[in-house]
Image (tube, rainbow, N blue to C red):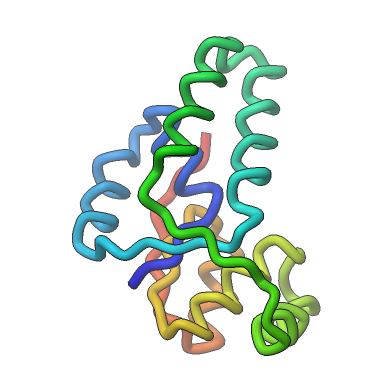
Length: 136
């Protein structure tokens, strides 16, 4: 099982140079999960790219359709255990990133991220993690 974060999904949706490396990792582990907020975080990043003139509105609509169809199971953080696990990471991570770490820990999954800070924190916490550089 693999937990994918928004940076990975944005890279896939925008044809980033790391797309083949990401796809290779995801194909190895076909059971991909993410916190339920993934879609909003990805759409926010895509909107930022559109406002920065890196994507057109048409590109954004296409990416949103592909996001909706992505074979990633969205996991709600409604259980007390997942919520408390998320809060545990607040001293080092944003609330968004803490959700990815908590989910990986809870499901004993590998975290796939393009965020070096999240990767470093996960590794220090002994969470299996793969970092792929998705910087623009």
